[in-house]
Image (cartoon, rainbow, N blue to C red; front, side, top):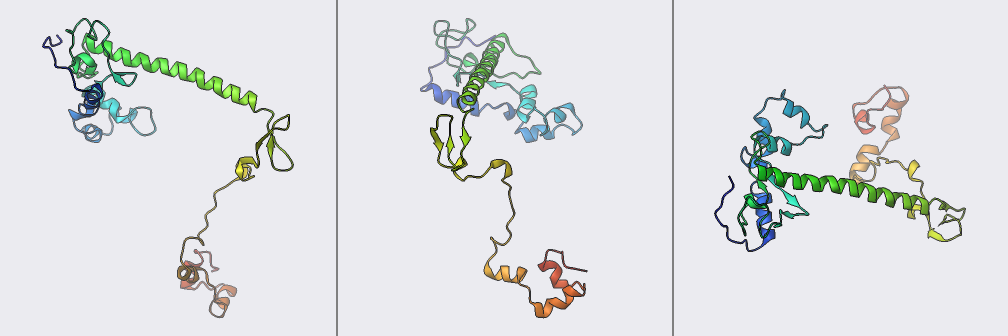
Length: 230
């Protein structure tokens, strides 16, 4: 049963939220996630669904076997909503971690009714944000596509719409087509003059005969990246 002992009011709600979000992290009972993961053999199912190429994370393992942690709504701890209390299960003006959304149990051990309610609050907020943001961003993208469907690059290099209004003086500020831009390695830019001369200078008096007759000199292979003849 939740505690009925009254709690003193926290000096700042943000300070208490920071404490519950950072200090009692799910991994504190079994160490950091790396330590938690090291307790299991590499062939376990938890290792499979928390590997880098999958959606799971080390925090998910900690929440399953350690504790779920602090639940937040709109970036804050669970607010009061039932006459100075979060749920009817708690007394009024209870600012303790349990009454403000901290879930000390793990998924493996099971959540208490109040912890389940708090966990559902955070989960519902995530679902709402996903649905709302998907619709908003999709509509913004559609409006941008319709507004810019007549924009084109003219022969003078400027970017204009169908009525001649200028959008850019030069496409992409550099006039380059991004589809044809490639990264090129330029090994001659970084070395100093001495290193450049050592690696790329060709003395025909010494190296010409070796290159012409196909004899691979020991120093030529290193200086020409192993592409010398022979």
